Image (cartoon, rainbow, N blue to C red; front, side, top):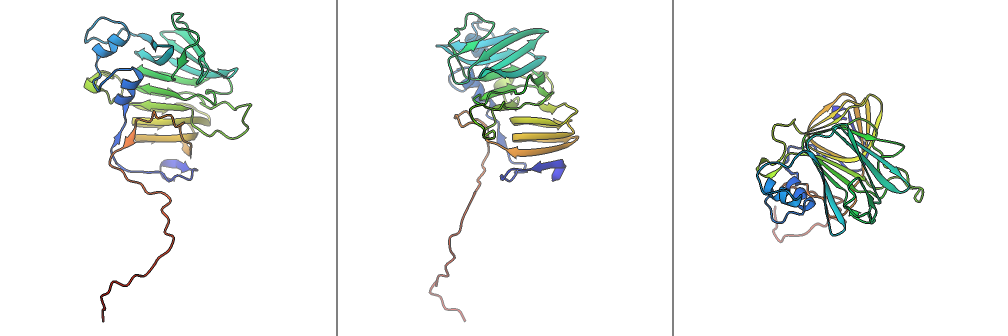
Length: 291
C-alpha cells in the first residue's frame, strides 16, 4: 500500500522508471487527419481553413468535419469548464470558454450530432476526440452520470486538467451488469513536434481537486504529475504518471478501455509474461556420467 494506493484489481501494478512513448504526436496526426509524420502550425492552419503561416490559429473552438464525420474538436487556448452528462441515450458535453457556453450532444457510434455550428450536418458521426491546446480548469459531471455506457471519449490536454467532481459512467437500463469498460480516456502531455503546443504554459498535470469521496471511471495518462486532493479517491480504470502527490487515499480497480485500435501509448522495450504455466517437470539424462 505504498503512497496510500490500494490495488483492488487482479492486475499487478508496475512501478518502474521504464521509458514510455506517450504517442501524443501520432494521436494528433490521426485526429487532425494530417498525413505523414510532420506536425506544425501551417499543416494545422490548412485543416481549419486559415492562410499559410507559422502563427498559431486564433483562440477558439474548432470542428474538424468532413465527409459526414466529425473527426475531432480542437480547442485553442484554456477552457474554464468541461461538463459531461447523459440524457435519452445521448452523450452531452458543455464547454465554457471565456464565460460563453457551447453545448453539443451526440449518439455514440451513431449518425446523430447536434451543436451550435449549423454548418455541420445533424446526421454526422462524431469520433469522440477532443484536443485542448491549453488547460482545462474544471472537468465536471452533471446529473447522475458523466458518460453514456456506449461512449468512448478521448480528451488530450496540453497543460493542466483539473477534475472537480465525480466522473462516472451512467448505468444502462438495458444491461444490469457492472461497468465493463472505462468510457473516458484523459491524456495530459506535451510530446508535440517542434514545440507546436504548450509553449510557456503550466507543467503537465492531472489534479483531482475535491473535498469529498470521489469516484472516477476513467483511464488517466499524465506525462507529469498526478495530484490527488480528495480524501478518498476510487478510480475504476487505470493510472499512469511520472510523479505522484497524494493527500488522501487512492483505490484503483483496473478496467480496460474499449478496444478500438486508438491506443497510441506504450512502454518502450518492455516484455511481460502473463499466465506462464509449467505443465510438468521432466528430468533428462544428458549422457555425461559424473562421480
